[in-house]
Length: 279
Image 1 (spheres, one colour):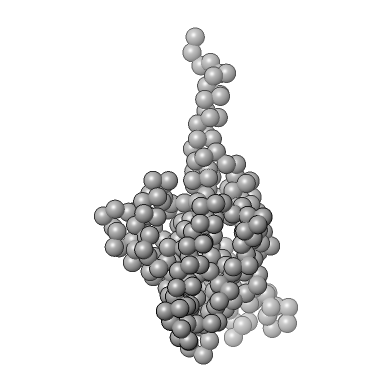
Image 2: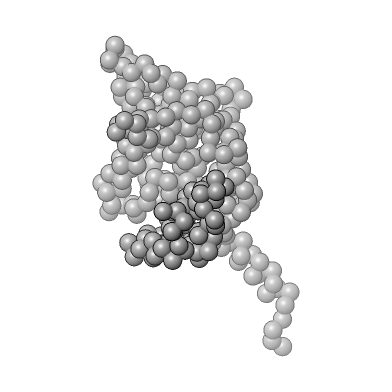
């Protein structure tokens, strides 16, 4: 019963989760859900106090993602020129897009006259009636994720080539071509939108296929690779925040501060030039 729930029982549950080698971040998610549920019970007078408030809050661990260097990214691009996922990988890498953002791209997102791309839709995968379904939403992860970025000539050329391939696929497939996703960029040869899980699984296959040439990273690490490359080229953290669509500066700084090696080296050189420790 709710009133029989003690802080020690919740703490034992967290200890059990840690024993299963779950990360502190995952245990923190459990804590937040449990606390919020019990807080609702407290407001409804189903409990006298919230036992989760008297439990040591799991500590969030700093996440350090993998990322590719400029050379590694270019190597990846050279290896996927004939891969069905190439447009997804190109766009995700260049713009640092989340998986849901790149799959949610529609042709209307690209303004070829003003040369801009607007990130404003997303595609996510969920379960409904024990079946995997794709949800298309006209909103991004947060308000800052809605952003307009420059559309460079190289990307325009890629999109034009991709459009030609789509037109050829339509002719080849005829009435069998899927008409549901005609507005979307990231579709397969039959016109069907790439499933989020397919993107993850297929990217893993690319990594395994080229394991002698490329280090294994996750699809989401293409986003980290974009950020690390921008940092390496001297782009300020605030501008990277806007490019990636992070809601706060601290989010960007917490994830990528360890990559600011050049900036820290500049600071060290400045100090060493003005301070004297020896005669």
